[in-house]
Amino acid sequence: MTAAPETEIPARPRTTIPPAVRAAAPGGERRRSVAQLRASDVYAMAGAAAAALALTWLLFARLLPFNGAVGFVVVAYALFLGLYALLVSFDEDGPAVADRIAAAVVRSLGAVLLSVLVFVVSFTLWEGRKALPHLNFFTEDMRLAGPLEPLSTGGIKHAIAGTLIEITIALIITVPAGLVCAVFLNEVPGRFARFVRTIVEAMTALPSIVAGLFIYATVILTLGFPESGFAAGLALSVMMLPIIIRASDVVIRLVPGTLREAAYAMGTSRWRTVWHVVLPTARSGLATAVILGTARGIGETSPVLITAGFGAEFNANAFSDPMVSLPLAALKLVESPEPNMIARGFGAAATLLVVVLALFVVARSIGGRGPGQLTRRQQHRRVVASRKDARRFSARTQQGPPGVGLDVTSPPAAGRLARMLRVPLGALFVRRGPVGAGRAVPRAPYGAGRAPRRSRTSIQPSAPYGAVPPRISLRKSAQDPRSSS
Image (cartoon, rainbow, N blue to C red; front, side, top):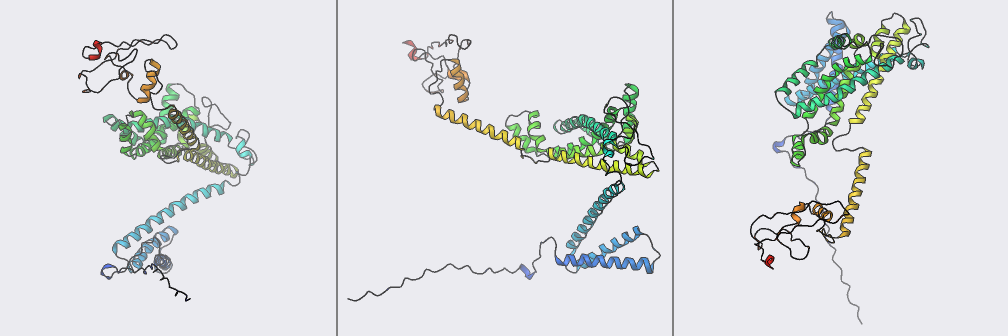
């Protein structure tokens, strides 16, 4: 007995991926890197900066009779731009050199603005460092504190309260008025809208003293109101209103017109389109507009001084007695030659910065969400509404198809059937004649064995529910052959 020879199973060929071969650039040109920052850029910038500083020092110290820090910085910056362009031109062409120079100028200007902001904030906090650690500085007023009193006595409680009261009054007036005016300028174009936009643009450059004098002449002198926080809030609203209107107008213009067209195509009215489409879409930009207006009004001193006066006592009544704000308090405190009063003034300025930052955070938290983003409460409402819809759909499915088990001869059932079928109630009844006892013939399309005459429905006035159901008048028609029987 011989064993069968073993047969070898041929191995399956494996799929191999050939190595990637980079195609040569057309014309034999070297591929250019599109990275934002390269090592050659860093070396060129560092070398240009070092050479500019060395050349400027040589010019100011050895060759030319120049001096001054400002001149040194200006000459060094000009030399830096020239040397940087020269170094970049060794590796790049003309458009790339212009792009690098423009980027260097823009970034340097941004760095200058940021450094100025940091300097202002740091200097204010440093000068007010002696007054800020004291708790009484935020819980007391200046009623019992004189120029020679230590920092442990007196504070700016009255100024903080006055600032919040005045800016609240101004926001209550300007936010609704500004948004409504911006919506009017965009949704109702015309000659009057162009006239209003021109007035708003002119009022953005209105001097603050003019706004204060206007409120002083109209509200205080003419109407007889006393100098108070309410008058100061009106003066601040005159300053803030053009800023809010102008910024909101620009933001609402950016809303795509296709969104409005889609809302109008669904049959939505204009005011519902504005309320549910335009304003939610521009919510973040409108919050920024309110912030800009608040920043303009909260730092004003001359309108407050003219309309609210100056006082050292705490006053929470906005309609009587003088009321001071933080900018006005800082101005009056730094005018004193005493170091403690100057420290209180810088402390008031630092507190004003914190108040503005807090208002900015609140405004961004309210309007910082983009279009379509919902809050947790709105998401919860959507979920609850979706669950209700799901339960209603499931209950309708269990009842069967629409019209099953319904007595169409009763008005309540006919109304429910009409709502379910999305048809008019009169379409459920015709006056073609009875088919059976107490039954109605549904409307048939024209040409289906009937004369092409439009039928009408005659339904008697309905009675209250629970009473005898109203009878349906089914008139006989001479054209119906079944009516003769």
